[in-house]
Every structure is written in C-alpha cells, then in structure tokens.
Amino acid sequence: MTPSECASCSAGKQIQLVYALGKLGYDFGTQARRDSFTQAIPEGMNILDYLAQNPFEAQSLIWTLNLDATPIYAIMPSGAYASVTYERLRSFLGDDENIERVSIPGYIAGSVRLLSGEIVPAIIPEVRGIYGWSVAALIENLRQTYPTGPSEEEYSNKIREYLERIYYEFRNLGVTPQERALNFSATNAFQIADVMSTGTAADVGLDTITVEKSPICRADSDCYDVKLQFFNLQDSRRAGKVYRFTVDVSDAIPVSIGRVRSWSVAS
Image 1 (cartoon, one colour):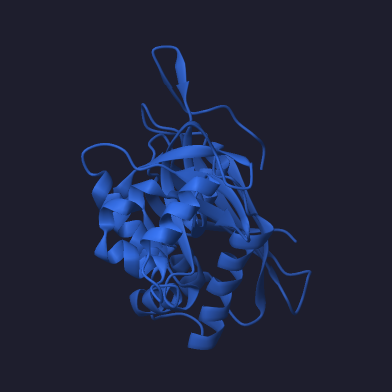
Image 2 (cartoon, helix red, strand yellow):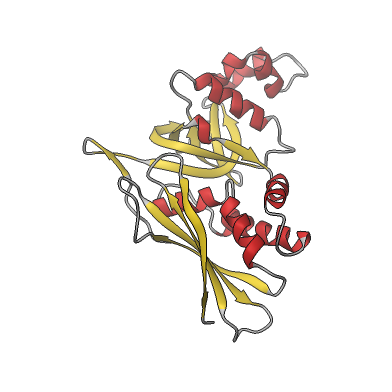
C-alpha cells in the first residue's frame, strides 16, 4: 500500500476523509471534568448506567476510537442528529460482549487534547456508516448469506484469517484511499465472503492482500481494487488464484462497485 493525497477537495481546500476501525473508549479531557463526573455519579453506579439515565451528559465526554489501548481519534458528533450518534456510541460501548470493533467514517476537523496530554485528530462522524460487530457474529451472518463452498469450519477460518490480518497486520488510521478501501472491505465483508465461498478450499491459503488504484472508474469517483492472491498449500508449482473487487472511496462512506472477479496466476 502506498500513501495518496486526500480524495476530496472543496473550493481549493482539502477535506480529509477518514474511514477508521477500532474500539470505542472515552476520555474526560481534564481533571476538573473527571472530578465533576465522579461527584455527579451516584455511588455504586457505573458511568454507562449514568449516561443511560442522563443521555445529555454524553456530549461532555470525549469519545475516542482506539487501536489496542492507544486513542487514535476523538469522535465529535455534530449537527442536528448528533444525539442519535451519541446514542449509538453509548449502546456500542455498553455492549462489549457483542461489539468488539466499530467503524467510524467521517471528516477530520481539528484536534483534541486528552486527559493524558496527548493530542489526537477529531472526526466529525457520518452516523449512517457507524457499525459495531463481533468477529463471531459477522462470520455467522456471512455464513448464512453464502452457505456454499468449503466446510463450515474451513469457510469460517478463511474469513477469520482475512479479518484478523486487516485488524492487526494491516491496521491503519483509515486516511488514505487505500486504507479506507481496505477497512471498508473488513466491515460488512460481503465481497470477502463471496470470495471465500466460491474460491477457497482446504488446500488453498491466502498469500497477499494488496490495494491498487483502479484503472477504470466512473465519473466523480475514486476507485480502488482490493486484490486477494491465494496459493496452493499442497503443491507450490500449481497455479494460484487472484480475486479482485472494487471500492469507491470518493465519499465519507465507501461503496463497493461491480462483482468479484477472479483469474489464475502462475506461482
């Protein structure tokens, strides 16, 4: 993956799009803000229960998107439906048994200082693209949608391998078009499920994942091809297989274009 310039510009001013994956958290920003919450929350009540009873207080916290234990963005809902965004963030953070990871699309607007003194970029999120999921639930949903292909266990393992490689090997800030296309592919993962259901077997392994600028794209779009190359685990001399699908990242919320395509390649 190679860095690229921001895809969206307005009146000569860059608007930095972002599509980031991570885990939700929150921060108080200052000692005084933390103390005010400590004094306001009744003894024996946790902060999420307090926010459920006082949803207006959610805007007094700094909501963060974290990679591992490191905050990478502050999430700053804005506009007429900011309350809807706060409600979704609260519900996701409170459901840690079913929500392992979230997607946060939007626009970078300034920066925020956290309680630790760290300064992180601020995202104004697009609420319709905010999703939360667990890997197990996502795989089960995909397995029901694409029931054909290899055995259920093998199929699930192939999808899990792809997701975990995106989450850990290719983890990123979701800023460049390539990063946004890759992160989007691991959010709903329907293109990946299509690949795994039709093109993988027990003797085939995922080799490389690459993202390239698509040579053909519709007008006013910014298209990137996500390519997955597989190799034969039993015989390295046999031809491998490449699967390719296209993602348009010109908007804050990416969208897939066309069908998954595949072809054989020499090992």
